[in-house]
Length: 121
Image (cartoon, rainbow, N blue to C red; front, side):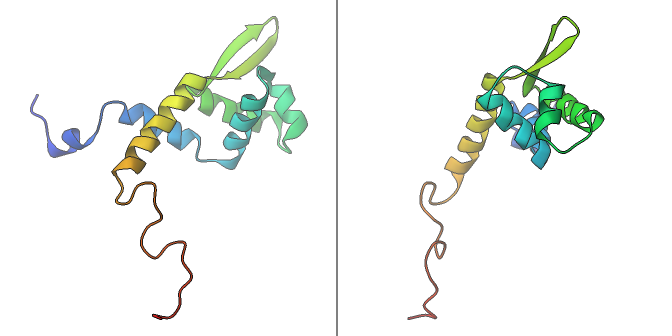
């Protein structure tokens, strides 16, 4: 199959990184990831105690994170326990770091950013 310009521009792993970033694109899901980073495993009920949302809403957010590969589900009897997939999170972070490294002035504020505007003085 010939490689098109679009295919050439998509790096290996970009699809899974995009899926993970999309899953992280909601404040509730970020809160869930933070909670799992602090304490793992957690059940859906644990999140219901700390988030002002219905159990069904939290379950949907957990499913999105699980489908993106950011969290893992294990069963302990009748209880569903969720844990953070630290490796998947680290891979996502490496992807963002690689993109940031390509930016002009990586590691330094961009020209004009972080400085007070002196009106040309």
